[in-house]
Image 1 (spheres, rainbow, N blue to C red):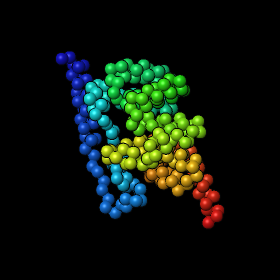
Image 2: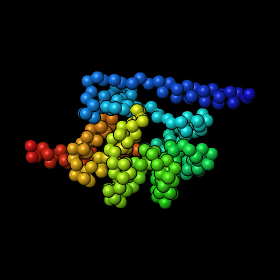
Image 3: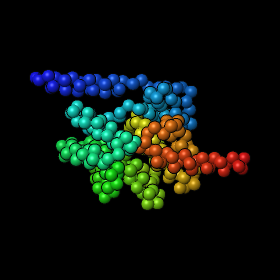
Image 4: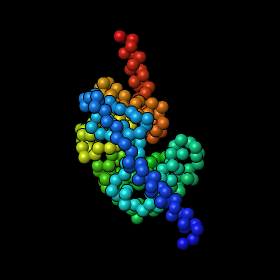
Length: 254
């Protein structure tokens, strides 16, 4: 085995060990937490518990993802970084995203059962403003993975952009809590909770249910007070301004 191959194998082993260590994060338990309060118990940005499920900052992987070769997992991690750099405007050009799309299309040909790859592809097209291909990928994702949370979130977002708010309860089966929508799951990634909460807050704002808006807003604010998660920034800022206005009006009439 060549020296280059030895170095590559060591790097892959190191990354695999790091992923394994992340899975061993401790769980926060707080006996004082009321099951009806829907509040979040923070612990130095480690794992969190939200009533009946945990919120983690570590990757939440599934069986299909776990079966991927380590080299593909590492490549997807690099693709995620490229996408985030583009969203953060650390990279101004579209060349990197175009190359990402080409690579994702090739990976999907070989590993068509991993929903997160489709999510990367959908968001890559959205970054480029290619709505036609983004819509096609989203529909394909919904057809292949009807229970995939990010596909539901993206579908709901598209419906609300068209003012089709009545479609949101249908998409989420009239279940407005993650633990009810996915009773078999005990852990959700922060990005899942943030995006789900943002969609729910917008929906209930359209219904005039301000108490529910404030509930989801409280979850988002506790998880991401500085809006570090830029994939949810647009929704977060929209909610922040709306609720700030509502608070001002409420204070006038106190």
